[in-house]
Image (cartoon, rainbow, N blue to C red; front, top):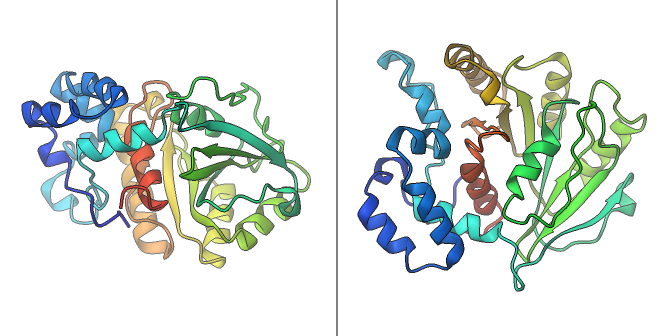
Length: 284
């Protein structure tokens, strides 16, 4: 769940003068975020809270099972998270190493989050978008499915570690099951698993297998809907409703709120950064 200190954000999103004044007291990164807050209201909502943009198309009686504001940070909290994801001399963000086995993984004491998903779900593209405030960090992105063959570790200052896992399904590494299952079961500092689902095609059989694995290991995990820029509003709403129903009825360890994102338009990226900062204890 969200850190207790987070303040409700979407309702306060358009209190622009007060919000901008508070952000002006922060450093230059928040100044850059202040420029984001000057976008037109509808564009701003779509960028920061894409799930609530979908809410506008729901009938009132269809909203009761649609979890929109369980994690609802303020613009100030989102700015704090952006600071954490910004590379500075004092906040180094670096690729650490890669590993094909858990005993080859770097021994990093800080909290850890990992990203898993089907081949070609846009996992590496999403991580690259998350690290866009640290342009020197190299996240390799390929148009060919199954490009990532190892577990890739990235440290975010002294705050946490992000792990890019190999994709499952088409062209997955031969030792994928041993590699990923062992990591998920034995990595003691793993705080949250982010399971990526393509919003265009929805949950596939291989995704179901990954979900079952997370449930079996009693892992806290989150479903992230990728490529929302490629879906029409109607199609995205249909997928969100179907996946939300699945989460409500079929899962126990999944965070009830979905996170739609686009690595192209950056819609949802700021919110996802904030959630990562929260679950790793950096917004307490």
